[in-house]
Structure formats: structure tokens, C-alpha cells
Amino acid sequence: MRAFAKPALFFACTLPLAWLLARAFGVAGLGLGANPIDELQDRLGDWSLRLLFATLCVTPLSVVLRKPWLVGLRRMLGLFTFTYLCLHFLTWLVLDQWFDVRAIAADIAKRPYITLGFIGFVLLVPLAITSTAGWMRRLGRRWHTLHRLVYPAAILGCTHFWWQVKADWREPAVYAALLAVLLGWRLARARRRAAAAAVAATARP
Amino acid sequence: MKHRTPGNPPPSAITPRQAYFDRRLFMGGLAAAGASLLAPPISAKAGLTYLKNARLSLGEPPNSYEDITTYNNFYEFGTDKGDPARLAGKFRARPWSVAVAGEAELTGTFTLEDILKPHPLEERIYRLRCVEAWSMVIPWVGFPLGDLLKRFRPTSRAKYVAFKTVLRPDELPGQRFPVLDWPYVEGLRMDEAMHPLTLLTVGLYGEVLPNQNGAPLRLVVPWKYGFKSIKSIVEIRFTERQPPTSWNRSAPQEYGFFANVNPDVDHPRWSQARERRIGTGLFAARVPTLPFNGYAEQVAGLYRGMDLRKNF
Image 1 (cartoon, rainbow over the protein chains, first blue to last red):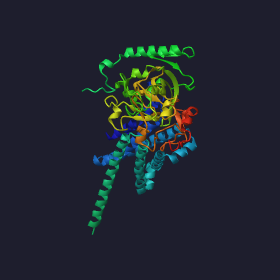
Image 2: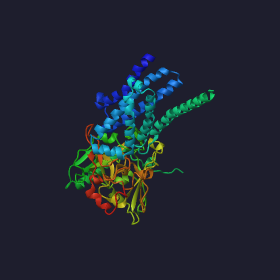
Image 3: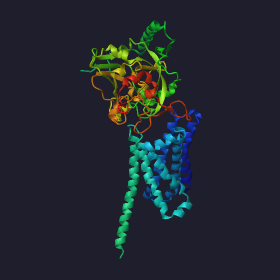
Image 4: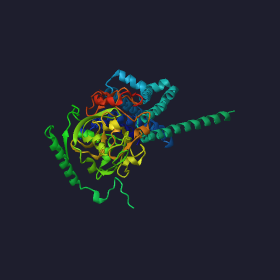
């Protein structure tokens, strides 16, 4: 099971992209519908957020299920998140805005949902870069501190989604609720650890 | 006592589908015969007979029937733009009747046939600009709303016209969740409603309007954002005061009563300066949005002296 988990997950992570490409190239009569650019952008955004959530699920799952080896899948999920996010960003930059630098700058500065989405993307760049074993070694303990940037990035991603819906907030609300659970679990664990550390400190003579 | 609601007339009042279409053909034929001396070619396709109004049509090629009928907002079916096409099958657009009320001499409930009978249909190719910054070019079939409104002889107190969409959560699954405060309501100032560009629409591409596009009777106000063009109308009310409108009620800082297409007034969350033309594929840049969606010459005068930033 452990040996198959990684390749199976890798394969699974490529499926949404393969499906989108098949639709984009009209394979077997598939298509992206009347508004292909928005469709591509929205679906890539969906999968970026979903994969980000999958990444955030790894640690709690490994603890709750007592399967520490699951953590070995986290980097791959994180890098797939970043890949989908890059494609989401590039679709916007190239297909949506056609490199119109003024329009892009105006959108990032003036549209709060784009501002937040853009900041979230920027926050994940150093995480992707420092995802290698070499960088983990070089950064040591600071690596963990740095990679906590994923939490604000996830909050920004959810808000980015919520702030662009017109009236139907149900789907972003589901994401927000899930994120609350994932971050809440971490907060509770941090508190437990802090309490345990305090007890240990006072117990020492 | 059993009440007669617009959605449920007694069986005796229901016109058989074929008879309905036959009558439409016949009436359309009469109108066409009258106009044939001066008229451009007449088109008859799947039930609708109409004249092509080239003068009030764009020169641009229209979007495909597929694009128009599979990608649109009709929140009564669902908030995804594919939902209307996917879920419209259950909706019964016929028989249909419309309640006319308020500041007019003639009020009451009228069958769809009563509403349509005297009006020759015409095709007009309009651009529809959605508030979400995309647009389509659509060959609608209908007649000027003003021609219908005059028949009810609105009084001098009628300053606005309010419209209401049908409320049927059984057939319109989107109405089972209060995304908006159902039923959908819209309104126009009297001069906007009487403007010759304002089209009461019953057809698309020469055919009877499909359910997902607002059958059997919808408004098309081409110089305003698409949400003003209310669909599946069951009530027309003449009012003295500005009537409430659904999107304005939902988010007043984002959607005004007038909602005229205006590239200079952005939606608070996105730019309205450019729009994506549907049907141009993956590699087409956005095109500039025109004031009043390109109909400024005909309608800008309606708003002379008004601050369009305030009255957005």
C-alpha cells in the first residue's frame, strides 16, 4: 500500500489537468463551453484550492490515523497545488489579460479579490522553491517556520474565492468551513503541546 | 374554493400546443402580408413568423444558438451558467398568463395569446452585456414593450413599470434556496419602458424562446446590464414610485436601479471597461465596453442631466 500510494497519488493529481487539456483540445468531442477562458481559469482555481486542502489534510490524517508515513506524500501534493496555481495565474495573465501590463497592475491594485489571490500566490512561491531536501537541510528549524506561510495563503485563497461570487456563497462557505476545521485542529494541537511543555517545565526541579 | 393562479388555469383555458402555433403563424402571416410592400424578406422557422429589423440590428455575426442556450445566468434554475440549460426541461412555459396591475385603466389577468395577438414580431440582433463583463450577440424575436403597455392605457400616475418572474420552486430548483429574495423583480422608468429599443421577447433565432432563456416572455433592454432583462414574466405593474429590483436589494452598493452599461463606472469588485465576447475562443483579447452598450446615440438622452456615477 505504502509503495503504491505515491505513484497512485501522482497519477490522480494529473487527472484534472488531463481532463482540462482534453477539453481544451476538443478530444472526443469534449469542449470548454461558451466561455473557455473563464472555464479554464475557474477549474484551475478550484483544483488549486482543493489540492491545497488535500495538502493541509496530510498532517492531521497522519496523526489521527497514526500513519506517519503519510507525511511523505505532503511535498508532492504541495507541488501539485503550486503547479495548478501557476497555471491558474498564467491563464489569467496570458489568456484573460493578454499581458496588458496596465490592466494587470490595475486589477492587482484595485480589485481586492485579485489582490488577495495574488498575495496568496506570492506567499507560496518560496515554499515551492524550498521544498527540496537541500533547502530543508540548509534551513533547519526555520524551514518549518517558513512553511507556516501555507496557512495565510489558504485563508487568502478562500477569501479570493468568496469575494468573487455574486450572491451564491454556498460553495466558498464549504471551503471556509473545511479550512476552519483544518486550522482549528492545528491550533488545538499547538495549545496541547504548549500546555504539555509548561507542565514539563514546572515539573522540573 | 380553488383559486386560479397565473400558473394554473383551468384545463378548459389551455390552448393545445399546435393550435397555439397555428394561430401564431396565421397572425404573423397577416402582419407580414400588411408589411410586405415595404418590407425586407420574411422569415418563418419553427413556428415564428417575423420581419427582420435590420435598422435596429447590429451588423455583427450573432453567437451560435448553442452558446446562447447553454451559457447564461438564470438563477431560478441555479447559479452555474450551465444550470439553466441542464435543468429547464421540467419548466412548463405554456399555458401562461400575465397579471397587469397598478396605475392603468385596463388591468387584469391576460393569457399569453391575448398579450401577443395584435403584435407583429420582428427579429432584432442585439448585444447583451452581462454585468460579469462578458457579452454575446443575440438574434431575439419580439416586439416593442411600449406597444403592449399602451394597450393597458397607463394613467398619468404611472411613472415606472415593475415586472415579476414566476415563482415555482417545484420547477425552478434555484428558487429552493434564497440566493436572491424570490420571486425576481425588476423595473424600468416609464420612458425606458416605452423606448423603441426595449423589446418584449418571445423567440430566439426564429424559434420559440427556449425555457432556459426566459420562456415564454422576457424583456430585453439592450443598453442595460443583462440582469435588467427579466425572464419568464408573470406580472406587469404600473407604479408611481420606483419599484424595488432584485439585485439592487441583494447588494445595493454593487447594482443600481438603472444599471446602464457604463465602461467608466466599475463594479466595486471588477472592471467594466472591457468585456469578453463569447464565442471568440481561447485566444481572443477582451474588447472595449461601449457606453450604453453601443446604444448611446438612441438612449443617452433619457439620462440627460443625471449623474451616471451616482445613478449607476
